[in-house]
Image (cartoon, rainbow, N blue to C red):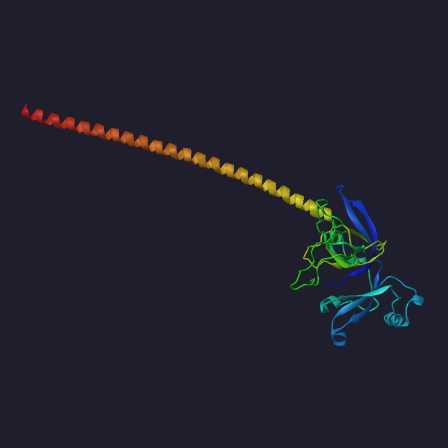
Length: 296
């Protein structure tokens, strides 16, 4: 687990990137968090950093918590939160030190944890997306009923965890891999792409993502790079096709040359054969002339 921050959801809006594309973002107000305690393995049994967020009047803080804040020389906050860290991550952190939005950078992926909106007691259709029963054909007052929930005789009970009507929402939820679009240090505000759980003003926890992503400066650069890679791939494909066509043409030319060479060899063989036949004919003629001269 990495060190994170606690902020308050401010609402949703949109911004336009350098290419003019509308990007939906959630604004989170993150005032500097104060380190109130560093827990160690020897004293507490685990390693963690405790931080406070927000500001609260001393008159509205009980004495036990107020003493804890005074021991750390930190002003009372609205609450405390722990982040479990390893030995390397704790290095450089001190009690009383302030943590601001410089902990993150634009283009980084983060996980945001909050409490979802409570929707009260809801039926199975809305809560678990059950299919409704027939609207007609004798159905009366059971259009949105659950149907069977258990067995008749054996085991004759409803199993624990059965999906039924009940409380919907108001649970802790984490949205992973949200991209930081912009960080406004002067306004203590961070803009994150997409939506996050909770109502406006609710507390949320921002932590570096547990997924292994390479941080990017801004999202549009990543998209531009992907487009550039696609264009390069297309150009490479065109080059490969041209190269293959060139190889085919060279192969054809080589084939034509081979055929011409074979034809030339055949012609030479024919000429040689004709010469041999002429020579043989000449030899026969000379042999027939010699006996006639002897008779004379």
